Structure formats: C-alpha cells, structure tokens
Length: 198
Ligand SMILES: Cc1cc2nc3c(=O)[nH]c(=O)nc-3n(C[C@H](O)[C@H](O)[C@H](O)COP(=O)(O)O)c2cc1C
Figure 1 (cartoon, rainbow, N blue to C red):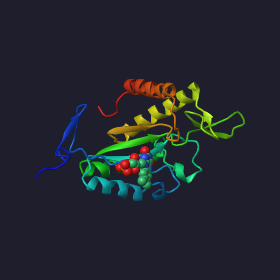
Figure 2 (figure 1 turned 120 degrees about the vertical axis):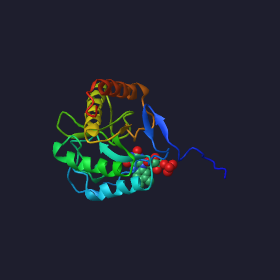
Figure 3 (figure 1 turned 180 degrees about the vertical axis):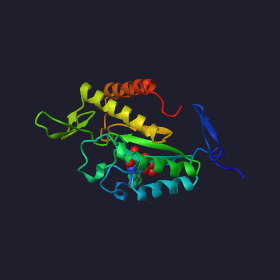
Figure 4 (figure 1 turned 180 degrees about the horizontal axis):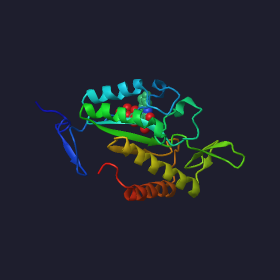
C-alpha cells in the first residue's frame, strides 16, 4: 500500500544518535499537573510516559522556564531543574520515558523572562522590548545564556537525551543579533561543559 510518509516509522540516525522512528511529540506544557514545588509531579510523569508508551521516538517535556526567580505565577510553573532536591523526580521522569524506548527531550524556555530592576522589582524582558517590557540587552542576554547552559547540563545529568532551546516566545520581531548572542554563547558553553554521560 502506498503511503504519503513511507519513512515515518523507520529508524533514523542523526549526529550518531539513532531514533526508532521519526515521530517526535511537540512541547505542550501541562503546568496544572504540577504542585507548587520544584519537583516533577507523579501526574506529569504519567502524562509524558503515556506519550512514550504511544510509540514516539522522542518525547519533548515542556518546559523548564528560565524565570527561576519568578515562581509566583501559575503559567511559569514551579519546576527547577537546578534544585538538587528535585533531581530524583527529573530522573524518574526520564526513566519513565526511556522505559518505552523513547528519547527524552527537555524544552528550555524563556517564556516571559524577568530580571529585577534597580528597585528590586521584577521586570519583563523580550528581544524587541514589546509593550510593557524592556528590551533585552547584552548583559541580560548573557545571564540568560548562563541559565540555559546550566539547565542543559542539569538536564543531561538527569538523563535527558536532547535539549530544545526556545527563546523569547513573545517576540514578534526577534532581533537577530541578540538571538545570535544567546545561541552562540550557549553553544560555546555546552561544547566546553564536561559531559556527565560519557
Ligand atoms: C495546550 C498546548 C500547550 C502548548 N505548550 C507549548 C509549550 O509549552 N512550549 C512550546 O514550545 N509550544 C507549546 N505549544 C505549541 C505546540 O508545541 C505546537 O507547536 C503547536 O501546537 C503547533 O503544532 P501543530 O501545528 O501540530 O498544532 C503548545 C500547544 C498547545 C495546544
């Protein structure tokens, strides 16, 4: 029988990693499944394990926000992969995904990035300084890059196989220069980071 996507269910090797098929689940945050701790809840683990059980080669977990200091809004969620206390729950999550032969990917997201201003108030940053926000500058971009790199390393430590780096999703007209600063700095840091998996 002819199919439109004949290779969809066959394995593929990318960068030395073999994926059992070409079905990757999209990131879809389910923060309401979590409690107000830095841990991944049992309900979230069951949600992502079900995606793996369904046969996807990659299950994308969404998302570890970069707003670590700003956990007072439900849509940010409370996950904190940098908190050593939460590491066991993240390992249980990746174990549950691996159990079904899928790879685990973690989305790192600057969903609505915040920094304290001189008065100690939290201010929202976007790449283009959209209404009600400040435009991200080089120092803020570098701080953000450090958070991405530390989170990516922690994700590897907890058993993730891939990282999906998302930035400033609110920005309608991303500044190429700032995006490149973040991406280049992140790539350099990841290259020099010792691998915990080798
Ligand atoms: C309920 C829901 C939650 C989502 N959460 C995220 C998210 O946390 N991060 C993200 O990058 N995209 C998120 N998305 C976007 C999806 O990953 C996807 O890009 C989008 O649904 C478009 O895919 P489609 O064309 O297959 O529908 C979400 C989408 C939905 C419907």
